[in-house]
Image 1 (tube, one colour):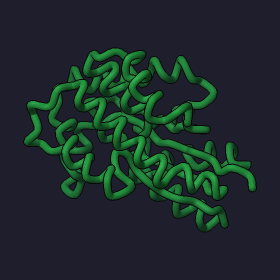
Image 2: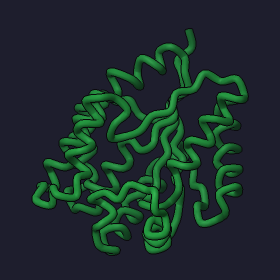
Image 3: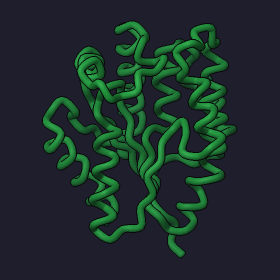
Image 4: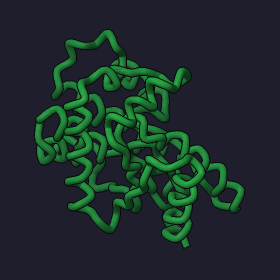
Length: 209
């Protein structure tokens, strides 16, 4: 059986990637593809429990390296329990965030170093990288303004960081786009939801075919 396709979506806070991911999933199912939708950190019971610890607004004392290790631990369990089995069954897996988030957030924005965070994650992922990554590009300030307007969205510990932190996240992502230009495809997330979905769907459909 042919191995499936591992697609991840990335972006700063408020880029709207989670909404578009759900719409991509629904459209691909309508198109007749075998698709699984999931998220990081989370997607399975153990990783969701780790997510609660990482994103809890009360955990302000969390050390940045502890944070990076918790993300890697959640990622490992999610991969072996959910993602890899689905890929081995030939499914298309669409995941909300993966290793690029750790590199941008903990590696660059927290100042641990992207190489150091990659080393932590190599142990967790054993060279399992996405086949395609969609990066939803939006100005960090505009993204945070969207969150403020969105009453239903979960506000987590990372949303409460300074604008400087979110700018460093975007700088980290830009570095990754330069490093992996074939894997990471940029989608302008400042446009209407319909336009963003259309651009994202076109990239995904072309890659699958």
